[in-house]
Image (cartoon, rainbow, N blue to C red; front, side):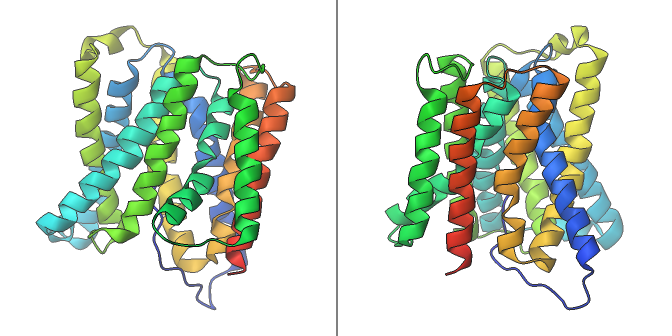
Length: 305
């Protein structure tokens, strides 16, 4: 989900509450990759993603309307446009690309490829005129070396070339959306922004899914496990974890919140190996250590700025 630029930590916030929220983000977002893999086994990938975000948007929007009145969802046209652009990049391009890619790429490998997002963001900041620290660039180089190990033909990491390209493209979409989010007019309330982002992404995914030949009738043969996984993605991936994430951005140091970037892929790799017996070989370990280590170095270097 989109990161908000302002972070503060009130003195009355319990450290236990902060760590509980962190654990929720670590596990819920780390497990979404396994959930996606189970969904795409017998569900149309883009239409299932559209259903996920549409359902989550309706649930979150209904909660906000009941709590604060329907007027809370009103936004100015320029804010709606900003939310739509960011939502399409993050959720349609980002999550949608991952969903397509996981048809042929193991969930753990997908998570490691997506973990490149903090490193792509440094490249985008540099292209925009910022000058990150030398330590930051060290982390970026280590991370890209790890990426090279994972995508090297015949390297043993698994997955098809098409699937890997889709997921790398998805990580770039997520990075561009994250980069643009604080630079575009957006609804002030982050939860309202998320509702419109998810609705915009759902519409885009519905159009793209229909264009590639997916049909609602494709859901007829979906297994119970796929429906359960889709429900898990709606409730825990799109609602619970995001709520915890936004709360953390308002109540915990950003350097601590940012640790999800290198914890999520570890959770995803372990779950994939334990639950669906995905391969945990030398290429996955070496490339994963490079990417996760690069993320950690970038987060640490940026924290000291």
